[in-house]
Amino acid sequence: MESAQEWVREAIDWIVLIIESAGALIIAVGAVLAFIMVIRAFRHALRPDAFTLARLTLGSYLVLGLEFQLAADVLKTAVAPSFTEIGQLAAIAGIRTVLNYFLEKEIAKEKAELGDSMPGLPTIRH
Image (cartoon, rainbow, N blue to C red; front, side):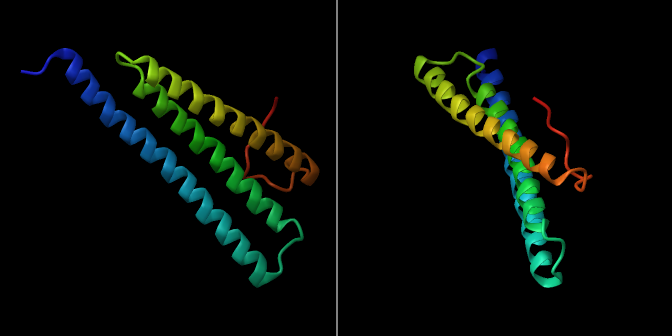
């Protein structure tokens, strides 16, 4: 019979898999949408800022997807973590946090430059 700790670890492994998959799916959807936007820009000679809109769309999805990935990493170390796992989490969290920070900053800057011509993207405030 499994101990309670083993059951909790197995449950968390499944939850982590679901959250990691959600993060990967979000990033993939963003990449597909941005790719479609770029193709449309080439085919239909859309507004000059069409490529910037594609970049910002992809950036927004990346930020959200990375947040899901970070949540999964935190959950991985939730049950009886070793010092090695804690160190790995700290490194991963640090890298993802820095990446998110700069992505959000660039998104906010470019969105401000474009004005309100992007109703589909969320407003990011610092």
